[in-house]
Length: 92
Image 1 (tube, one colour):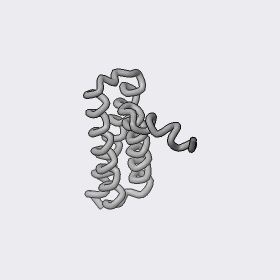
Image 2: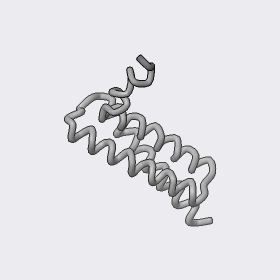
Image 3: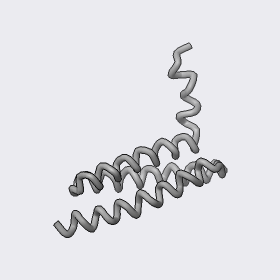
Image 4: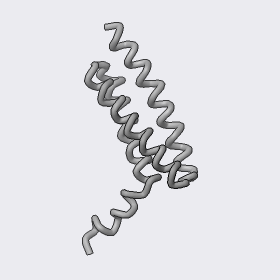
């Protein structure tokens, strides 16, 4: 059995999906912070929107796990940081 198929159920798991999308959003926000350009900000907003959809999905599946809660906090922090970057970009 291929290694990939062993873990495919985990990748589709709502809390895992949320966790992964939050990590991607966080990286996108950090990228926007280090390169405050409109395209980076836009990419980060899209990543955050994706993570928020994954959060709703996790909640609908009753995934009330500690990791969901931690990732929710990380997502909120990323959103605040991104709004700060957006201000910088708009003022340029």
